[in-house]
Length: 423
Image (cartoon, rainbow, N blue to C red):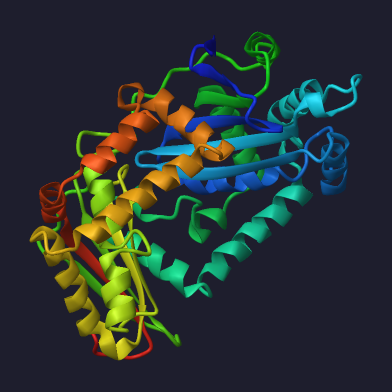
C-alpha cells in the first residue's frame, strides 16, 4: 500500500508474514551538498543518543528495553546525487507478545518523540550531548587514517571525483566541516531538514496498512516539495588517468583503480554489466581473484565493486609494493580477456548461479526488501522482478560481457605504499 501523507511525505507499507519483526524506516532525501553532509552525519549520532523525553543514553536504552528489546538507529548514505538520512526502528511483532501488549503502537509513539522532540531548545541541541557526539565523530574521522584499506578507498574517491567536491568527500562528512560546527547551527539545520527534505517512509511486517497510515498522519510533518534531482551522477572523462602515490608506514601496499562506466541502476545494460563486474572481480570466482590473487600470487586480495549511481567500477588490491607494475599489468590483462571473450564458459555459468542465489537470499532480508521498495519509489520505471532478473542473468552472453568490458575507462590510480618510486 502506498499513500501520500503530506505533499512530499510518502508512505509505503509492505504487509508480510515472513518475519517475526516489524521494521519502519523514515528516509529524509536531499540533494547532495558538500556543506550539509557532515551536519547530517552528526545529526544521526545525536538522534540515536537521547531525546527530550529520554535525555540520557541510559533512559533511551531503558525505553528500548521496555519495547521488548527494540532496535533503533540513525544513519546516512549517498545514492549518486542524493543524500539519505535514515531513522529506523525494528520491533518484535505484536502476535508474539501477550494479548494486552501492543509494542507497535508504543514503538510508533517513540519514533514520533525521537523525530519531533529531540534534546534541544531554541538555543540549540543540548550542549553536553552535542560536544560529546562531536568529539566522537572527530575521533571516527581520525581513526580512518589507521584503517588503511578504508583510507585508500576514500583517497581514490577524492582523486577520481576531483572535479566535484560533494562527490569527492565521504558520505559521512569530514573533519574540516565538523570543527567549526555549533549546537545552534546544527539545530537550525535540523529544522530545515525536517521542513524541506523529501520524506519516504517504508514499513515491512505483519501490519494493517490503514492503521499505520492513520497513525502516521498524526506525525506533524508539513508539506514540502519533492526533489527533482536525479540520483545518477556521471563525471566527465579525464583526458588521461589521474595517478597519485602516497607513502606511509604500511606493511601492505594498497593499489586501487577507478574505471568510469556508463550503466545506471536497472537500465537496459544493468544486468550485463552486473555479470561483467562479477566475472572481472566482484566474486570469489572472478578473474581477479583467480589470476591475480590465487594463480600469480601477486595480491593478498583483489576485488571490484560496481556503482550504478555514480558511474564507476572500483578495483581494490592489497599488494607487495615491489609488485606495483606487475599487478597493474595483470589487472589490465583480465580486462582485456573480458573484452576478447577469453574466459571459461563454466566460470561464467557458476558466476551466474552465484548472482541468482545472492538475489534469492536477499528476499529473506528485511533490509534488502525495504531498500528495493525505496528504489521503486525513487525510480518507478526501473523495477525488476526476481523472475525477470533471473532470466536476464541467464541470458547474458559472452559478447555482451565483451561490450560492457569495452565501456570501462581507467580514470584514476591510487597507490598507498611504504616505498618510493613505484608509480
